[in-house]
Image (cartoon, rainbow, N blue to C red; front, top):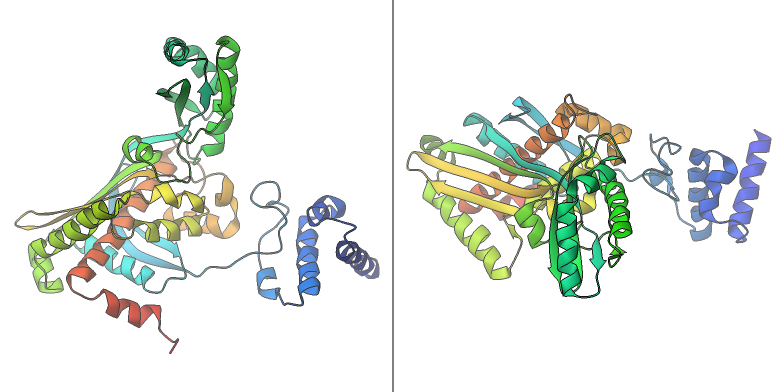
Length: 414
């Protein structure tokens, strides 16, 4: 024990005297849990602050370093609650789930929970995955536009050979198609892959890299400028993702009976349609927003944090359209999300609390057949977004939004 204490003090001394870098501790100590603790102690001494809450964690950092994070000092905890039960009918699910939502926004979980109650009491949500593909779009430069056109023709004529190169990188990746885009002497090739139960961006990147190297080695005038040419499009709102999709394109819908709307909520279908048209459609058009919705991002973010998804991909995963119709005998309500980027294996899904959240949804790990769990997960995400969106639009129609936030968002804060 004394030797261990002496070693820690020696390491801390070297850090304080700039004789050792923080990122060197994992290799030097051979234990990332010890390295994590010493980095935290170093910061506490250097800055004169207490980081003990950040240090309280169940994570084994030996399994994190090199996979999920670097220079670790602990973990951040976010409150997680559940909304449900939410009844969902989809290709991979036909039953009720409790949806884990990790958030610090008061009223969000309650909002989704109320929406889930309305949806479930009216027969549940129907949820569909229309497209299932992860993309990567390298940009190439050619001598001139004429050469760029010949390049596109060559790629189209040699798709089978390119497909073999791309798919040689993993048994889980399948090239679905290549969409070319051209501007002057520049060509973007948007590769679309099936990636099983993984979100698949890393898989798609590795496969595209192999394919791109094959392409430039066989078309002498082509130069690969960047493996990611911003036509993918990752972590940015874009028209191409909105129209062609990235990840899973999901549509979820529900029908709320007229008697239920009137007697339980004091609303008519036209009340809800009017709010949706003027806020989500016209208001979004006025602001040139890619989000023709009320708050998709709230629900998507809370699910992503809880289940270990790439949270930065909320940017494109929360794009979408809310649609409402007065059917005379009730309200038709739907959400369309063109780019839901989710996986049930890899990345942050391997962390212990995130695995439990996926287990709660019945989508932990790989599915049988491959890809079925990620599709089920996307169907759940769509239905949860539907529930949260419906409740907020109903609250706006009932003029209750401010009251709900005042009661739940500021509770106990004076």
